[in-house]
Length: 81
Image (cartoon, rainbow, N blue to C red; front, side, top):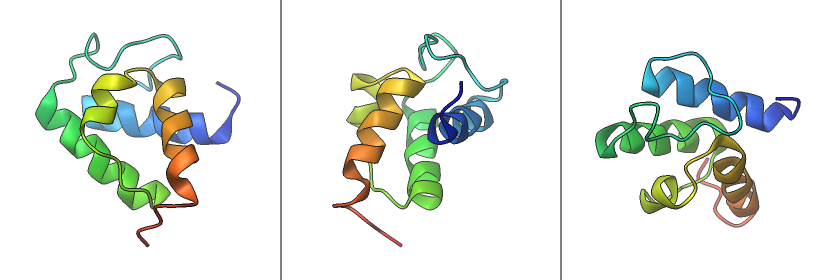
């Protein structure tokens, strides 16, 4: 990936999933993700990006680019520093 935010997000995904950072077309759930891991991901996203993300967003946006786009769209309105 060439986008710094997507690179950061891919790194977070890899950390919570226990795998290398996924590519842009890889699905969170195909990589072994499930609801408890998704909860870890949303906590990590809140810590790193300062954005609260509802758990269902992981299910609705299961690739790094889609999830990152959602997070960045909320960044300005949902700061949780």
